[in-house]
Amino acid sequence: MSPPVSLNPIPVAAGEPPAAIADNPVMQALTWAATHFIGLFQASGETFVGLVTGILPVLIVLLTLMFAITTWVGEDRVTRIVQWAGRYAITRYTVMPVLAVILLTNPMAYSFGVYLPERQKPAFYDSAVSFVHPVTAFFPHANAGEIFVWTGVSAGVLTAAPDKYPLLALLYFVVGIVVILIRGMVTEGITRLLIRRQGLTEVFDEYDRAFLQARGRRAASTAPAGGEAGAA
Image (cartoon, rainbow, N blue to C red; front, side, top):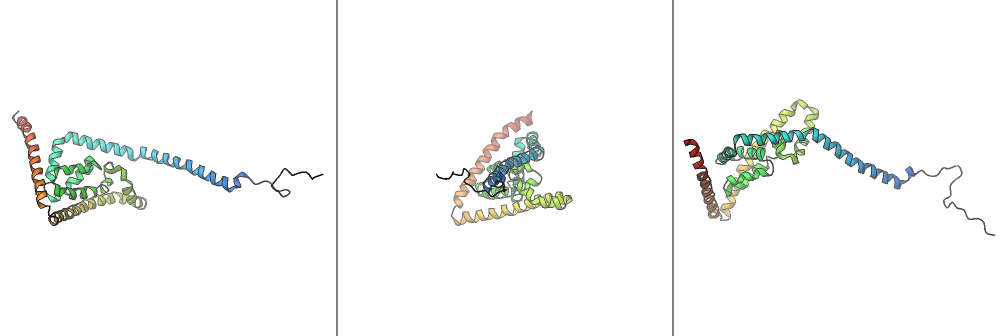
């Protein structure tokens, strides 16, 4: 007669308890993955709550303020200010991009280039795109999607010397204006050089004539309304 078959395939020493599920490496890995998977969304929720009670109200108020200023001043006056700033190199690469970024925000700020001739548009874009980070020091609404750049720059100063935070913001803003002026002037010079080297002078002269004609037509279309208002 054959001996009875044991129903326990895994030999266990006498007096030794079976291994707990928590000590199983597979279960440990699954538990770790589940914990951190849920933790990811919990951390995201905490960050969102921090934004709702922190930066989001500031962005909404700033956007409302910029819209109100544009409405009070009037779109026509803002347009004339931008056109005036585009006539001179210094204001073209300081006042014009600063107003564009603050009022229209990124990326709509580049549409102010429509008030410039073709040969000056690359330089204006270079100056405007270089200001979308320094502007967040005082106007975070202008480039809210990349505000992490400014927060990364200021995090150390805010922790080590909070009283120096306003000075850092001011220097960041002012240095940004200096940099966009330099970039605009250099890019305009490079653009003119490339136009001459590639024999495109006549082409861009034609662009300039078309630009002046279009500007004249816009001025003529607004002149009668101004004359009637003055007569009244």
